[in-house]
Image (cartoon, rainbow over all chains, first blue to last red; front, side):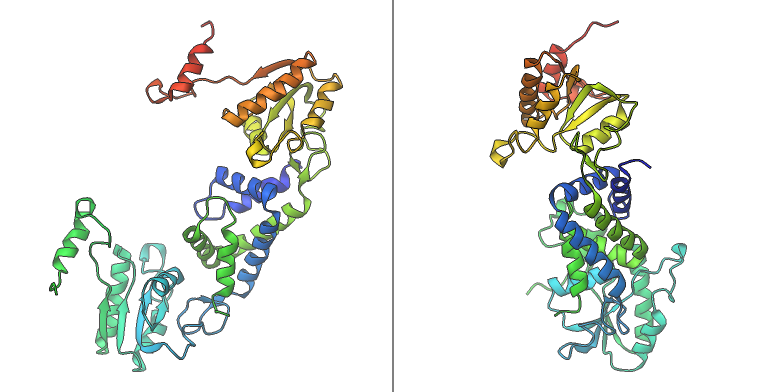
Length: 199
Length: 199
């Protein structure tokens, strides 16, 4: 057994983090051990606690330590507007960046047959039952603007339309602060076809 | 207390890692919780174990879980050649990249008066006692090629020379694979002044 074994084990363990290779993992391990042992212990506790206690919301499937998440169980949210997103990160981004006051349905992925992700994995059956029960008046499709995200939006859009529920898709176009010159042609084309009357 | 509290706490805890901002910490937390809970638990254990058990080698000051590290306690290393480096990461790089078979002295930093890092913090008194005892025949100065690294090398070089110990500095010049065209002028100038007879 080499004497660097604990250190090597720590470096190996850090590499499960997305975007962290050998060099970065080494730097992280050294920095924690040399400068922030208290922070490292705290991180260890938070990791364990999160893994042991965080599960999925029974209503919207997002990550939460409660049976029903804070948003789904809030009395002040409008349960008639359902925003469908791919991940809990999207919920966080929408909560921080918009004044949306409806509720969410978190797919925890996107349709991707090649990766074995179909309707069941995304809980579309559960979503369908929810659309069935008549409470929802509008479905906002807020999946990513990727090929898979569009396909997923299309499938859910069909499900909603079949039941006569209003279905909207978040707007595509020029990002705020964006310069036309540097925009890809597909975004620019969407921006033109989606143009609106100028008040 | 918000229901995302455990998740938020985990995201906050991840931000102590070098180079990890809010967005990256979010991505790490989601990835761990959605795809690699076992890896997260393992990381928690490795962090705790490393913090609790890893200390400094009594001889060379590197990070190790033993009183004397593997290199210092190895019978096959040449104790007459001492390589002075700034950090345990440097030891790892030299062990992987060279066939150096001497021993190390790890400063755990570099002279940096503005940051309050002086000779005491780098254990230069201990290093001096070691140079004193006569076993060391050569000191290789392998601190970084930065201003602070050069100053540190200079100070230690003086300490060694005063005791008649041979002192060398690792070579500066063109990195292997490097193209002259893209090299900074200071490196190029070092490469010229340090030119050697071409065999």
